[in-house]
Amino acid sequence: MEAGQRRFAMVAGETSGDLLAGLLLKSMRQRWPDLVAAGIGGPRMVEQGFEAWWPSDQLAVRGYLEVLPKLLGILRIRKRLRERLLAQPPALFIGVDAPDFNFGLEADLKAAGVRTVHFVCPSFWAWRPEKIEKVRRGADHVLCIFPFEPALLAEHGIASTYVGHPIAHMIPMVPDRAAARRQLGLHDEDCVVAILPGSRASEVQYLAERFFAAAVAMLKARPGLRFVVPAVPALRERIAHLAAACGLGDALILVDGQSHAVLAACDVTLIASGTATLEAALFKRPMVIAYNMNRLSWHIMRRKQLQPWVGLPNILCGEFVVPELLQDAATPEALARATLDWLDAPDKVTVLQARFAELHQTLHRDTARLATDAIEKVLQS
Image: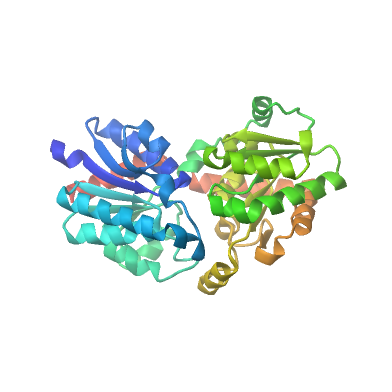
């Protein structure tokens, strides 16, 4: 491989994408020490020597109406990035999730002769099936994190490789709850509820107050509960304000990041739908999944939904193994009741933990190495 073949471009659009891309970059740099990578990324990518022309959090938005205030800025970034990459084509472009941003960019680069890889198959099997055509136009190869996806992509003539889910490789099969509690200043005898209202500003806007109101209701029903909230740095001040306003006092602990320690330490979690629900499942924790968004965005999304489940643990298990309270159903009272139900059902928790252990085994692969192997084959093709 010539040195010029090691100049890659990458785009990761939010915290979870930055995590995936950071792991991949570490593996690729071990394979190709002189690798140069640039584009849009976050701190995990920068730690691996990535040159971030724009920070990934500028693309972190979910929903239909919620994206409108940022849309012109996002389109401007994509136009400038496209022009830059077409003027100096990289050997390979890797789009890490962020499908609405990456697919159009990948299609233009592929048409110009740049080889393209998309990391994380879009969930066309769950909703928005029209995405599959965008994948076909844009990606030479797809790196899949769920085992059933390659067969579905093959039906559409799209090359792919199952690489496992990197989070399953990062999270221990048997989490050390005692160590996590020591790290967070919790006692072994504490009954701990983790509250994860999301990593996007729009999620915090629509969920945090409901979650904190639910925590107040839980504390009234069960005095002595402890609540721990991991906040992403960019949203810490906002979450801290909402947490202080709810009046939980010393019962609530707000920590910077450390979501994995919080999930390892807790007895149950009230959690926003998204990648964090899979992390909670891999930590073998019972959970209540909730989501709320702009009403019009919700109705649009519901019409495109193909499966009865929204949360990843339920999708991967093929049934409602944990409750989902979405939109109008996500009232503080209902959230509190569903969360407390887990604390009163230890036998049910044991069954759930066994199910999650099976899921963990299925997803556990050497993701970074397998992904790097697939990328090398694309470069040699």
